[in-house]
Figure 1 (cartoon, rainbow over the protein chains, first blue to last red):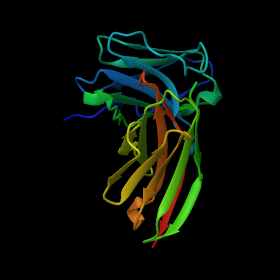
Figure 2 (cartoon, chains in turn blue, green):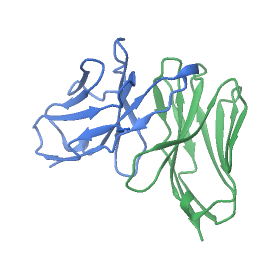
Figure 3 (cartoon, chains in turn purple, cyan):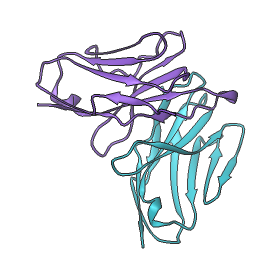
Length: 116
Length: 111
């Protein structure tokens, strides 16, 4: 079946502009995560959604970052007034949260954001 | 909040040797510890995981051990092959499914 998809695959923007990154999770997956990966670095947790619960936003680096998930499916990560330090690959992952609470996360291909 | 430390950051081994990557975590409430492999230019993929009620888990050439008292867990790869070359990430998840990743270990397997 279809995996997690993200769009756009690449985004180049000018400092100060707003950007929207989209994630389409695997159908039926209840949990959705956003991570940021800077060049050669680890995966920095940003936010996650689980069913109808309030999202855990504790990883968002500033109030310029926000995310929403509509209808328990598609999610959009918005970065306002982008800065050069926002340049990174933004990865989305979804999880079925299966029996026993095992949480295998399936990652999308990422969106490479470059802020000039 | 949870903090996960991973070392070494880089590991180079000869083909056929074993590789060990170690992680520590800070939150005693964490109860799920997955390991992901990320090949160059690709997305991370789960290779093995362990729950806090288990001390060791093995899947062919890879194994993970967990010491909950000491709050550390390790990945062991035996009989390494060139295709094992990748970046490996450990992670810890609290009961609320928030997942914190380590900084990664770049493994080079020399043929």
